[in-house]
Length: 94
Image (cartoon, rainbow, N blue to C red; front, side, top):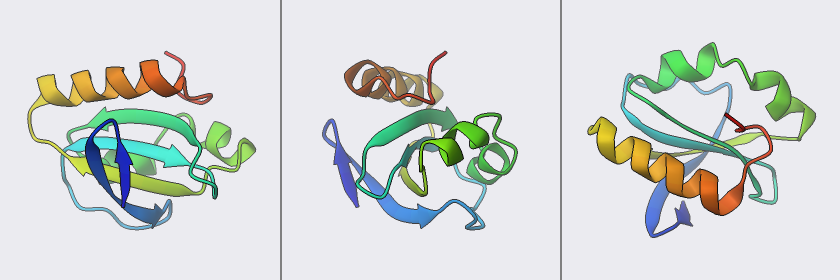
C-alpha cells in the first residue's frame, strides 16, 4: 500500500497485471516509489491496457501501479488534480 495525500492506494501491482473493471485513481511509480504518472478512470483494465503514455513509463523506469478505488467521477478528478499538483509527475503532463 502507498499513502498519497491521505488516500491509501492498494498495490503495488505489476503493469502487466489483469485488472478488474473498477473505477478509481491510479499512480505509476518507479521502484523507489517516485510518482511518474497519475490518472483516473472508470475502467482500470481498459485504461491501463491501451494507455498512450506507456512508453513514457518505460523510459522513466515506471514499473509499479497503485490504485485507489472511487466510483464518483467528481471525487476521482479532484484527487487526481491534487496528486498532479503536489507531485508534478513527469509522464502525466496534460
